[in-house]
Image (cartoon, rainbow, N blue to C red):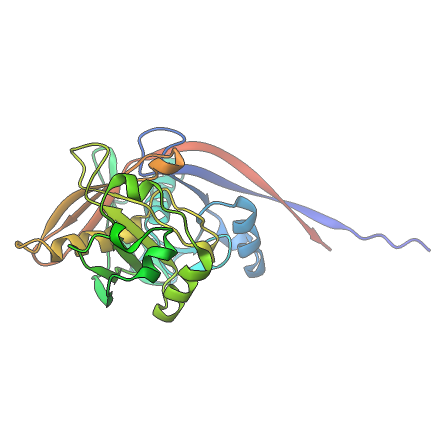
Length: 298
């Protein structure tokens, strides 16, 4: 007797785009699966790990009549409730490849509904309200987590955990050369971040490569499988709120540089009004489309 084990092949299309850049191989890459319902729940994390990008999104029909689509976001290690470049990149794919003409496009994430609209050649989103969750003293331990010394942290600016949906620890350093030499000590970083309930550290400085920009930043979230992130739109909103809070006028209009150390330059545009309305935007560029071949045993 011969027993046969049969399988079925399923092709599921996806799109990869670079977000917060005007050209290919800059910005932050994102994979978008526009037919998320074709995947089983236990396949989502496996697909995100296979794509091995900082985030992969899966689009579904809306569960709310206030949204056009539901969207789930996965890093290589786990699902997260909200992130910036997946929000803009998913809207870009839906508008460019799927014929979605709504402006704004309303996307329903675990964190809630986010509206994305087009202004010229940029996509913008309104962030949830910001929260300052913690303020920390400058310390040797924070410096050690970054591979720096105490004196290389900028004592003129506060160290804060700020969130507009995805919390991060914002740490000012004194110069661009210091920021460029950051080297993460994962063990020490975990000792700092875990009690705070935070996954990302976000060192920055006021010196920029382009003098027209506002701050230069780097972002690290090793527990999410992100050794370094080339562009972090969700924390850009938190950075905007932080910047507005130290501005006497309590507002901000800024351009954030990121990704240069990874050779993926990114520009993130942020505006925070006096009423603390937070807008984050940037350009997107297509990279490729493809089909994932899933084999399922029958």
